[in-house]
Each structure stands twice: as structure tokens, then as C-alpha cells.
Length: 386
Image (cartoon, rainbow, N blue to C red; front, side):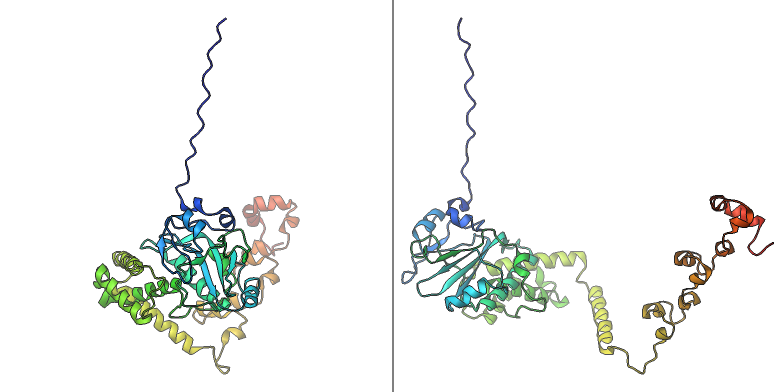
């Protein structure tokens, strides 16, 4: 008997290699929180050879001691350059004032790079969202102050923890990446970011807010729709705030901020949120709020009639100084033997049948029958009738 030909086994599924650059990052780095990186990051051999070049991700991690961790359009990590003694930055990193970093790379000089990996990279192009940038800027400023880190650090190149120069001096700590809200949990509620931040993340947010305040004024509404005008104002403001401090600042950063400002201004103009009527309403709200703050708390000799009537202050003003008697009596429903809800449901005048004590006993019927036919029963015998 001829053998029945068997079908060939199905082909194995094609294993497509990851198109992401993170695939070329060493496993130990990915296991400690790095989720995204640049396809062609900047790399260097370090001092005294600071020649920057763009190389593939795998080559950068294998051969270079200094490299870029950010992706092309997003912030993937927070890197702090600590020039203090190891005892200081280690005590801060393991203390309660900041969260635990993902790793710390110490240089032979004793200085270190402290790295926090972000679970969701923060986009910083013209399509960026304001809230993540604000949170990132606030976190970077606070952590820089706590560590006493170098504010002039451009955060462009970071020590490669897998390079032979730093392998023995790298401390691997947290394995999971951090969310922004988790990093911000340790920041005191009363702490405020400086008006002119020192970190790149803070600068981005400060410039965006300054541009929105400037072009949100009625006299600048027409200019807010012109990208060239907005870009020129942002570049002049940046040079005025941070002269000769473009290290680590992306060459398109000002352009991205200008595009975001133009997009927000155009949307606000179309929705009417920046029209003159809205400005007048806001001014009136501010005037009333200022009067209330200047008034402050009432003087000791100022009459407070709501205290004499034993009612809340808001109740007194709700009734324009003439509250009904039902609000000033001391629980009249207790004297009538009914509930507070029943009292207010009948506007302080409950029917007599609700006040009478057990009228069904005098009628010789059950309580259920009384409530089922209470209207008919009340017509036969009123409370107080014999």
C-alpha cells in the first residue's frame, strides 16, 4: 500500500526583529527601566576626546563610554550630574527626600550621574502636551536642588554603565521605571518652581507659559497666529533669560514651542475664550476676589446675628438676613414626635394626622390599615375628636 503523502509542517512564523532602538540596548539596562532611546545617539570617548558623533545604538553602547539616552523627540530619563562627595549623593538617593534612582554611575573622580528612567517618555516637539512638561520641569528642578547637582549640565551625554570604565563603579538600584506622579510624590505641596528655571525641562515650560501670557493679551491676538512672529519673540526671550546657554538645548526647541503657542492661541480665538468679554469677566472676578481678601475676617465688634440664632452663616445670607422660623427653632420636630425629614418635607407645617399619637388604636384598626387608608380614616375621626 502506497504511503499517503503527508502535508509538510507549517512554516515557522517569521520573527521580525524589533524596529526600535531599545532592542540594541544591553539587557541589564533594559531590566532597570530604560524603555526608549535614540536610533543614532550622540556618543563620545569622554575626556579629553569630546568629539561628538552619531552612531547606531548598538555601537554606542558597545564601544563608547559616554552616550545619549534621550530619544529623538522625547525625554526618556532624568540625569543629574552630582559633583559632590559620594557620601552626599548616596545619602540623598537612598533617603526620604527623593525617590530611589534606577542606577548611579560613579566616575574615577568621585563624581556621578544619577539616572531616573521614565515609564512614559515626555514628548517635547510641537505636539507635546503641557501637563507632562510642567510635571517634568518641576521634578527636574526639585531633584537638582536636593542633590545639589550641576545646573550647567546639558544632560546630553551620560556615563555608559556597561562600559569597562564604569562597570565596577555602577550601582544598579531600581528595576522598574518611574511615573511622573510617583517622582512628584516626595515634592512638598508648597514648593514652587523658580520663575527662571535652571534645567532644560524647566526652561521649556517657562518659555511656553511666558509666550502664552504675552500673546494672550488682546493687543497681541493678531500676532499670535503668525509663526514667525511668535518664534522671534521666543528666541529673543530665551537669549535674554539665558545668554550663551544653549548647551543641551535642541536646535528646534524654540520652533516647537512657537508651534505649540500658535496652535493654542488659534484654538482659543476660535472658541472665544480670549475675547474682550471674557477678559472683562475675569477682571470682575479678580476685583471681587481682591475685595474679599482685603475684607478678611469680621471684626470682633461686628454684629453676627447668625450666632445669636444658632444657624450657619451661609444660611443667614441665603435668606438675606430673614431666615424662616423653622431654621431658628431648636429641633421642633422632636417636640412633635416626627422626623426631621418629615418636618422639612411639609415646610414646617406637618398635617395633624402625622402629629397624633397612634390614631389607629382609637379606631380599632391596625397600623398597616391606618397608613394604607389614612386619608379616609382621617376624615372619620380627626385628632382630638371624641
